[in-house]
Image (cartoon, rainbow, N blue to C red; front, side, top):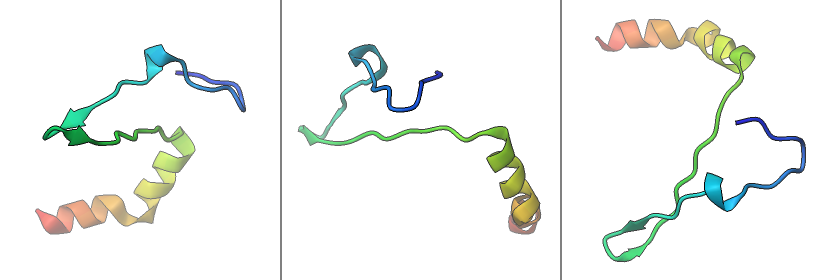
Length: 52
């Protein structure tokens, strides 16, 4: 979902959650392609190969 800088979320984009009768907070986000490439170049694939 694309947002302009400083634009808030609408109630349609936020979902409340309840866990075990108490309150909880769900946080999610996204990453751009350049961040993803940086993670891969930083050795993620080699680490995954080493762990099986």
